Image 1 (cartoon, helix red, strand yellow):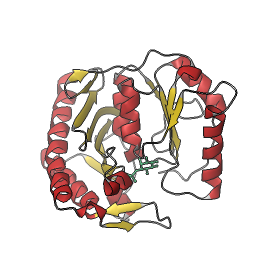
Image 2 (cartoon, protein in one colour):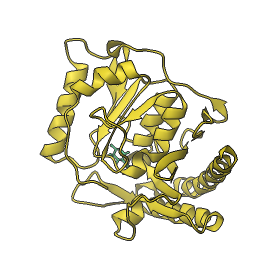
Image 3 (cartoon, rainbow, N blue to C red):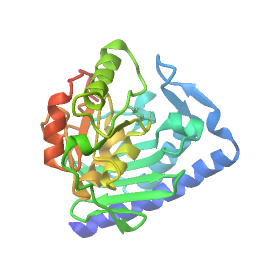
Image 4 (cartoon, protein in one colour):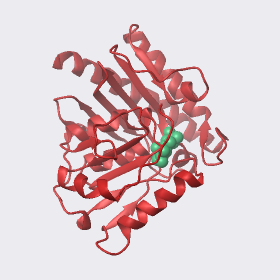
Length: 280
Ligand code: IPD
């Protein structure tokens, strides 16, 4: 019911705000630069703060909702968690989306908390702690930025759009080359877009589309925690969130396309090249 979802949303927002105090403290102590490399790629980073925030968010939400399930970026990356979605309410968390931004102080880093019930995304909270911007949405209730209603852009032509995408944190040829080609196809002649942007945070990118400051965002290689909260926020702001091939969004499918409207999505889908990643 709307009341139950509203309750989940309010708790998630509260937890995100409290979690941001951990981040503020790390920032004030200058701890953000102490990053370790997570995978084979020097651009895939994790900090003590990512781990501390995830632990805190899990603990707080588990206290409120002991029967719910949890998926978190750092638990899964360290092998301690799984990525299975069941009908049980499941919180999907990225403690700091945009870790490289966090390390550099580039102000697009987000604490991201999404909730799926019956495998459907219903609540999204995304807090950009650098900019003190709290994006919130629940299914059927609209999307908000710091409590004010937001909505997507009304531009329908691709050549009048700003499109956000990203290289991702792994850069092997099989993925990097098609990503660059997609950017070239969008940004180059003929019929180029107003601009291509890479923000270094999937969630922040989704929030830019939700708040009408960019027309679309797509990315292959993303994980469920990079997109869960942001997809709800985009949809509730009036936009569409689908799989890059044009089919229904598959949050474990390692790809997303969001756009302000169907016209834009229809113009973008044929330009994209499918990149095959192992499912979450
Ligand atoms: C990353 C960011 C980045 C995107 C990568 C993600 P993380 O998340 O969202 O923008 O390009 O695909 O992995 O690792 O900083 O939480």
